[in-house]
Every structure is written in C-alpha cells, then in structure tokens.
Length: 312
Image 1: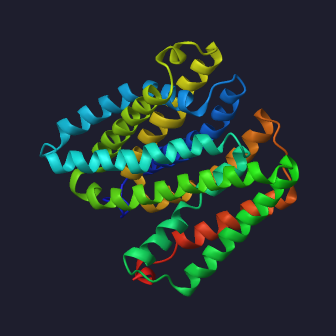
Image 2 (image 1 turned 180 degrees about the vertical axis):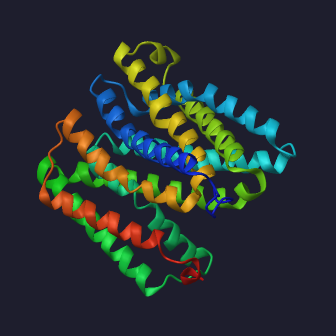
C-alpha cells in the first residue's frame, strides 16, 4: 500500500466508488471483534476460532496471490518468500492471535481503541530504531491518544469490575497492536518492490498456515470438527466479511484514492465497534468511554495529517 502514497487521477464515479470501498473496508474490519465475542458465547477457544477463521480465509488469499503473481513483472525470489513468511509470522499471525486472546477479557469497543493505537507505535518504533525524531505536535498527539485510552480502560474497569482481567486483556491487545505496527514497518520494506496485493496475499497466506499449525500443536484435530454450527457460521462470516473482503476493498480504495485519504476512513473503526457492541453484545456505553474514543481518534487524525518531514 505504501507504493501509492499520491492520490490517483480518477473521475467522480471512481472516487465515489473508492470512498465506498474504504468505508465498507473499515466497517468490515471493525465487525471482527463483534464476531469473535459472539463466537466465544458458544464455548470455542481462541486457538480453535483463529484456526477456523484462517482455514476459511486461506483459499481466498491463495487466489489473490495467484492473480497478483500473474500480473507481476518478476517471480518471487527465495529472499522474497522469506520476507513473506516473516511478515506473516511476526505480523499478521501474532497480531491476530494476541487480539483473539485479549478479546476474551475486554470489551470489543476497548479492543478496537487499543488496536487503533498502531500508528502511534509506528512513530515510537521509528524514533527508537530508525532515529526519526517526532515533532512536538506528534508528541502532543501521542499524549492525547494514551490519555484517551486511559479513560476507556477506566470505563471497562467500572463495568467489568475485574482489574486483573481488564489489565491482561489490554496488554494482550496492545501486544497485537505492537505486532501489527512491526508488520507495517516490514511491509513498507517490500511493498514498493513487490506490490501491495502480492505482499498482502502472501503474508496473510503464511499467517493462515501458521495459525493452522499452532492449532495442530496445541489441540486435537477432532476439536476442529466438533464445534456448534454457530461457530462455523461466525468463522466463515469473519473470514469473508472481516478479513478477505476488507483487505480487497481497502486495496481497491487505495488504487482509486491513494493511501492518505483511505487511511483517514479507518477512524470510523472505533465508533462503529462501539455502536455494534452496544447493539449486538449489550456492551454499555458511557460518557467517559466516548470522551476517550474522541481523544484517541483526534490524536490519530493529527498524526495522519502531519507532514512527513516532521518525522525526519
């Protein structure tokens, strides 16, 4: 995705379609936490649910990779395959697994807010390892984001009443956000050379294989076929509507609009998850939580609009 930073020249209809794809992609990604929480109500554990989601997703990613490979000018080298496997393992697989574990302890709304911190982690990691010093404006934006998270955590503590579980869930999901931030930084190293679609399909395909391998190591194979029908239905919905379709739609949106405008539509995510959590999971909404959400979104928007030289 990083290979298309500029805004492509498209007509009004193409731009409208691109915006539609971007919004639907953001909604699809936000819906994942709801589907996970609904699945947990049927007694499935994180490892089995993740394996089912990835098993349903894998054929789609293989197809996407084959199509992207046919359009590519050069085949992947051994080094390229190594990059894809590393991105799949340390990025998408680990981020997904930690996220699924964390959702067993905290609300869907808080999970989405913590995941939404990944741009702040990219900035902090870039400062630590790449020597890119953040500007004063960036530092203020970071402060606003994390104060907002503190308010949202306070809301969950008040509702859940179990500080240990909320803390554990927050740490797991924060680890997921950190893993995804590392994935994005590594992704940027290869996307410009290999193309967004091929990198996404291959890295995601490897993540699916790692998730299935983890299940086979930790759980008996029979468990994969002994779930309630609702778990399979929700896993399939998660694969199609919250994994494969959003990946494709965001890719198409970037092709029409550019990466910058599309990234801003991601700010819909926390608000959508809060609304869906209230409607479908009976999660309580409080003024403190809404204030925290607004602060996190505001902080991320400030960072998204910051010119690149400010990080140099």
